[in-house]
Amino acid sequence: MPVNLESSSAFADWLAPRIGAESVSVETTSTPSGGFSAETVMATVTAHRGDTAVAETYVLRLETPDPAVYPRQSSEELPEIEIQYRVMDAVRRNSPVPVAPLIGFESDATVIGTPFFAMGCVDGDVPRESPPYPTEGFFRTSTSSERRSMIMSGIDALAGVHRIDWRAAGLGWLEHDGVAPGTPTQLERWSRFAAAELRGRSHPLLEEAFEWLGRSLPVDSDIVLCWGDPRPGNIIYADGLPACVTDFEAACLGSPMMDLAWWLMFDRTMHELGAAEGAAHPRLDGDPDRDEQRKHYFEVSGRPEEDTGPHEVFAAARYAAIVTRVMNRLEERGQLPADSTIWRDNPASSCLGILLDEMRP
Image (cartoon, rainbow, N blue to C red):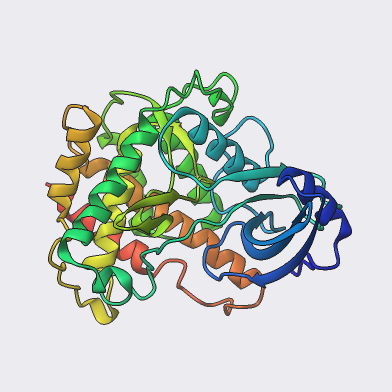
């Protein structure tokens, strides 16, 4: 989505008072790639305050015209970026979990052509997933103690999100009016979402998974604010610790096991399923295995240990449904041929198959 911030006097007028400046000039510096939801734009802003002019970096998240890649959780019809902004603001106000400094949300599309929110830029490094972070990048070149710190402190942040009193934080809007939050609601919601995206096509593995989940998911022990997409790739790290957690557009109210299982499922994709032709990536020194990560979560959260296996299957089923949605969008844009089967044959489905095999008697 082309956005020309430099020529938008409306954006400059919007931003200046929110950052305590008399006036600003704006230069778009980059549009980071990656992700399939909101678009990200980075901008260098020269802020004029009295006799000084200071260059500052800000990040904008822009709503796109594409359908959301997640099922709708709220009874309110909200842009994805408004969901992100409101959840981030609640996390900021109600926990020590670090999020980017928020500047403001704007629903009026006339300012830059689409709804958006602005936030400060947080310095640090992100474990990239393509190629998988165990094979290349700063995670691989870090020390073993730094690698352990990154993974375990990421789980600490996840537990911190779950400790938020979502009712006191005013997050009840994350569930439809009159609907009880929890795993049964999420299973029904995601099953309907997957069926709609399959568009009558057969995906035997995904269909089997949802049928199995209907019999096998445990009763919820608690309902919490779920991050929705917790993984190292959605954390900006500095000195081995989270400087900023990101990407709350899939936030919901549900079992904490939904989030923990998603984290563990993505760990699997970065190791066992992270290489071409099915070759696994050996776990680097200091990178804790999934049993260690699971145990650490229960220790820092103070929750009694649970079997995360069924929820890991649910996580992989959600991932496979999301991939189907994204591939449908690419086909609609003409970026995939109509006879492509990548919507069915992909790493998310492979992960789902492995997890189902492990859970079958």
